[in-house]
Length: 230
Image 1 (cartoon, rainbow, N blue to C red):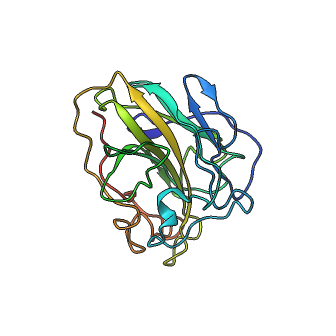
Image 2 (image 1 turned 90 degrees about the horizontal axis):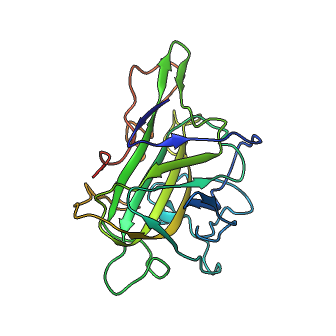
């Protein structure tokens, strides 16, 4: 497994082509569905976001859904998501965080603006048959909250970019969820670089518009900023 930012790919489960991330993993516990994760628009269809300019690229949030709770976690601890089935397509898992501004909470804030910093990304294995990722066939994905992360409320966002059809613009599929967390015991770090969702991803980014099978790429750069590890 190759990861930047200490992403851990854990248990396997039943296979599915499409999937959601309804359960937050925190404090060594797997939550109930949509307990700490905002219910997503695809909670029935399991379908992806394919337009990187769509506001749904941020949290894929279902309008009018019941409000999620917020999980309290310690800086330096592992936090992640469990999918409703295994990730069935090749492509990277990435995890982002965004600090909730003063006067708002993780439950009330929409995550807009140039506020998202990356804490983990998954790198592929490249061989003669194409690019493969360890997340394929797995169901649980976790990353440590960097110890230097300042205390406070955050949105904690997972995305899986499915690249099996990414040889044409709009062919990449994004499976997304946002959890709500309060970080305690944090540090004095300055997380960054930060980006906006939507706004910073382009349909023609080399990590989004790519044929992973032929001709076999010699490298892969996922979209978004460098990982912040504190």
